Length: 144
Image (cartoon, rainbow, N blue to C red; front, side, top):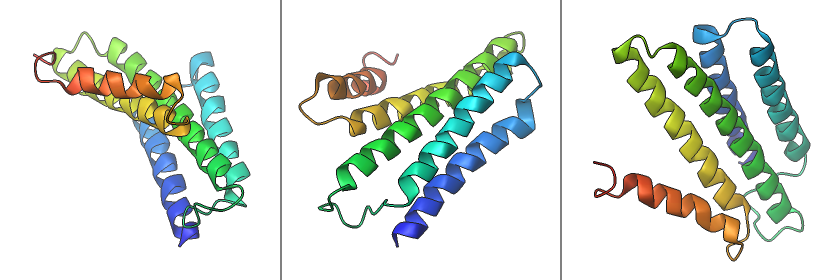
């Protein structure tokens, strides 16, 4: 079961990266830096894969493995958020195209913040930041 869960996380991360590359990637210095970040994410997945068992939360390395997985997913989502934000900047001349890029970028940054909050111990002050940001973004009074 843990292999299937790991494969799903790995596959969807690869899918999101590949879908961006197919649609918007060009050969530039910036894209190569982002590509190296995505490569580091895959290395992070490989380092966790040998002892990753989310079905056994009381294992001796479970907490550190889940924290490593959360930080790896956070880096991936932040990189995708940056990529979509840069694409949104180039799409600003097309008003209808800019909004979907902005939404997708904010969703990726939100997911990255959630992974960052999950990776920290509950009493750690950094774990509060993603919760405050999500509440501020989804509060009906502030979202108008």
